[in-house]
Image (cartoon, rainbow, N blue to C red; front, side):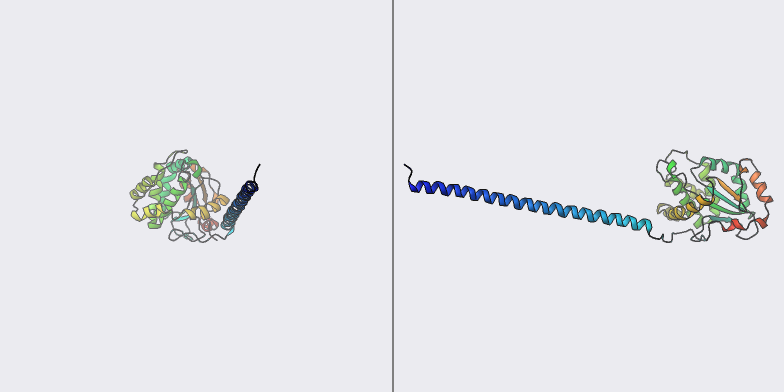
Amino acid sequence: MATSGSSKSAQERREAQREALRKQRQAELKRQRSLRTVIIAIVVVIALVLAGGIGYLIWRSTRPAGPVATPAGVTAEQSYLLLGAPEDSGAPVLELHIDFMCPICGNFEEINGADVAEMVANDEITLHLVPRRMLDSYSTTGDYSSRAANALACVYEENTDNAIPFMQLMFANQPSEGSAGLDNDQIFAYAQEAGASDAVRDCMDSRTYQPWVRQVVDPWAAENGNGTPYLEINGEQFTGWDTAGALREALLGASASDAGGASDAGQG
């Protein structure tokens, strides 16, 4: 027969077990509440980060564009590099849009490059040279046209006399569409051959004028031009450049009195 002491001892054990289970459940509930709190905190942080990121992107996309760096002598709204005779000199104005990846621009240079270079050197024409980035996507790096246009602007800023020789060298060694394009070492080698100093390499590597090409030149040229190469003489489109000598003849025959609108291209 069980004694009262034994019954009491069994009861105490059961109560101890129940107490242990109660404490275990409380600990588990506490752990779950803590875990839930941590999860909620993480979700809130992620939501705040996402909201902040989206807000920043919206701010970036809607904020007014700040001023961009332009080559020396080029105004903030000017979409071209000025070569040859000064503006309003009475010389015919040739507006020329080029892209260094554009194979047809290479054809233009082969047919007309020497004539344009000579007429610029002799101040027979005012050249508005518009460097485009239309074919960036046609290089495997996705930026060859932009890098080449920037390099032209860098060369131009240091010495405008080197711009045409540099352009000629770039087209003489033009890469094919679908390639990586020339790397910066190769581009700089042609810049040096055209007369550029080491300072031009710094300008190239820092991509100083790519924002100008992207934000000023390209939007204006897309609205006012028609691909590359694109030419206007005194504000009128010229399409007969593929016949040797035709462009030179048209420029020599152009009336200076017709040059009005062309000299304002790309300026506010």
